[in-house]
Length: 436
Image (cartoon, rainbow, N blue to C red; front, side, top):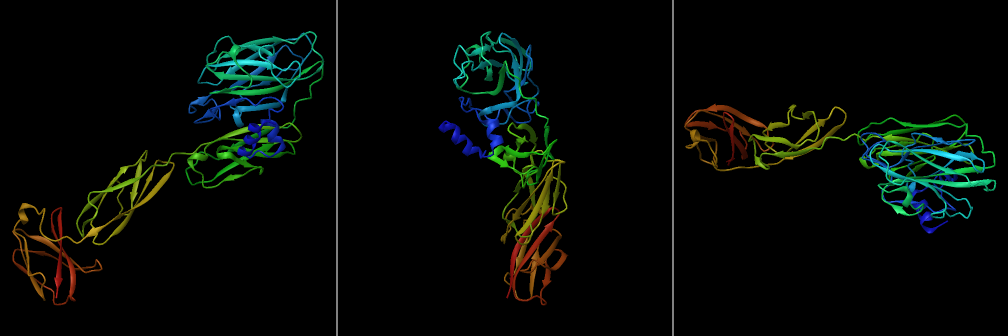
């Protein structure tokens, strides 16, 4: 086993024999691809997937026992390589074999077929490249290649490699080199021998997605016989449990999960795609933070993603809400896109404001005197205003409409600092007053 192959096993955590057989090219070279897996953005051959560089169909005619591996999609293994030991080709010397291949739905792929006729564990190029496309066939179209088993070929089991590479003619393709996009599949060719019967074990994989971030995903594997189960998936995920659970899922955990199911030496592989729904993003902003204690301020959702509804702790169901806190106050907002809900908290800070800056013209002559005071103070204003007085705990201790020159009696107040809020229509102004 090569050093690179050994390291790839360590990274993926593939320690079970059955999974190793599925992904183990040894004693042959391990083909390499830079983009792994060969489907990304969604399940294989779905419109949501922006990478579909795979051998979706490979089938043969003309043999005693033919291969029919259809709609296989991306194999999901390391380096986009899989050894399909359950699919076998049985031929006699001199047999002419026709191969039908089809790539995924997005991008044009070239194809090449190699067979190790001299059984030296090396696909010799060009002598053992038995077929290859001269150009690059379009995506999702059937390509026909053919080869003839040498008439003098000795009985035995021979390794066949089928490889696709994005935008690369098969006639120029190498069985081992590193390419950007594509997929590689190995098969057995039985010459002058009876191929083993196909496996009677069947396998399926499924899950309960789509789900929202933070929820659980239940992976489910079914089989027709007594088997072992070995899962692999994104972020080097592995499990030998038949029906494992992915807890508190995150967007990076989405993708295709594969289970290798075996009742003997040759595993079957089934895949299922886990969809992670996008949750709304929430960024709250304030018209002023800090704001004057008791003054009206508008909170708004500056970025709500794909949210369709909102719920503030104030009762508002809009993208904004107006608040008038007298002390530092935390507000919450939840946003929903009809599937996922995101919540966040925002703290509106307050400060004690003094002076009469930014007062409207109708209150330009507003005067509060004396301040500090003992039991009484007077409010001089050119208009009628609402006056609210709050103690240090934010409790309303007095609220009344005040005319020009009116005296406010505070004999029942304890000594200390109070907040006096002047209200005229939508305008609010908070002033600190002190009783000695």
